[in-house]
Image 1: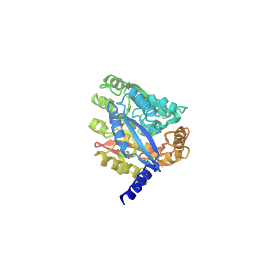
Image 2: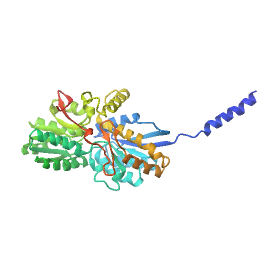
Image 3: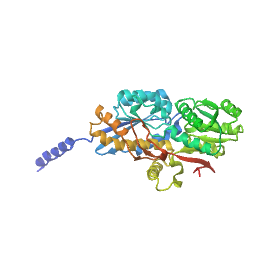
Image 4: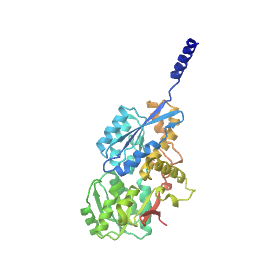
Amino acid sequence: MLSKKLPLAAAAVAALFALPALAQVKVGVVTSSTGPTALVGIPQKNTVPLLPKKIGDLTVEYISLDDASDSTNSVTAFKKLISEQNVDALIGPSGSPNAMGVIQFAAEAGVPMLAPVGTAAVVLPMNDQKKWVFKTTQNDDIIARALIDHMAKSGIKTVGFIGLNDPYGENWYKVFSGLAAEKGIKITANERYLRFDSSVTGQALKILAAKPEAVLVAAPGAASVLPQTTLFDQGYKGKFYQTHGAALPDFLKLGGKKVEGTVLAASLMLVLPEMPDSNPSKKVASDYIAAYEKLNGSKPATFGANVYDAGLLLEKAVPLAEKAGKPGTKEFRNALRDALEQTKELVGTQGVYNMTAADHSGFDDRGRELITVKDGNWTLVK
């Protein structure tokens, strides 16, 4: 009896091992979960476990690396993911300078890159390298236009500008200055600083001397707080504006009463309870926040949502790419790039994506809300 069962058992084991394994998509993720950009990178890293682990009949593996906010480390991480892990897509890195430094390597390898960074320079102007990059944050002009309109309606005629001395700050000045000129708003001071600077007193004094009616700070994460608190301490009484780079809980914690009344244009995530249920992104954002809070015990900054949206974009594009080839092949990656570029009306956490060959961000005005700080909390500008 036993002798008859053994062949059957052996046959069952053989059949089990003969089953075809699920094909696997590999996605590399690079975040700045340590270093000066950590307030941006930590929620991005913590979001990775919430990304889809299976898309259609394909499993998805995420290989997550930390670049410690260093651009050289970003390049090393990208090269490693491309050459050693043979990834099909890349998400990251967290910082705008870091992202600008790795575009060429993603393009040369033909691996689509989903960049959760602020500067529009990663996708504009479009060229043969940037066609491999897809941006999961609002382009600067969408945010800047809302700020300029608010300034114009408030009767502001002069503005001081202080931004990071990197692609984020430079592109913001380029976009903002052009739009300001259209509205007859004069920029009376133009200052720069580094994201790891501990003092901007010299820059602040120059802005004070120029006597602008308002000041715009262009920086992401914790770096957005220092110029504003410095100017406040030196007695500046004008209006403060911030970019969507300041859209994180720590801006309120670090700035305290010194950031009261700040105006910024940013994600609906900051004011979700005030948003109508008819807003297409409200449910997606609510589901993401609930899942993140359950996993990490705290609410995410909007920067984490940029990585979550990268997962949504891949979830829609991968099944289309699979028709052209298997994961791990050039054919699959080329088709994945093409599928991402054809994304239409995909509802994300912060807006609706409509990609084109010329627009690899895809947001329209549904991707921003005009927000202010009132009594230590975010609230819609009425």
